[in-house]
Image (cartoon, rainbow, N blue to C red; front, side, top):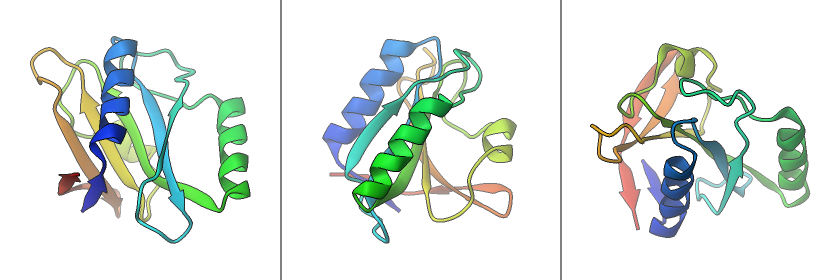
Length: 134
């Protein structure tokens, strides 16, 4: 289960709709060894694509170094889907980072009404998990 604060989710939703039709992306960091998401970090989608995202490599290096300095790690990877529901695509699964991280998808597609879902990627499969908003 992913437990996330409403304010954090609002930040992600705002970014996702502001960048539409380009996919938004980012991470939420938290203390190493914790499952508590603390800091939303919007990332630049260097692909500038409506169908996939790629973190800007320079920004990613900077953000990962800052997380290391503060004993943080990625708790949540997030991105938006602009032309589909909030289900992982084949590419999302193929390029996912397996492990304990959560993967949050926000749909900005006009037919999905801001659908938000969270997943874990296990053995090459997306497993939906409960999303608890506090």
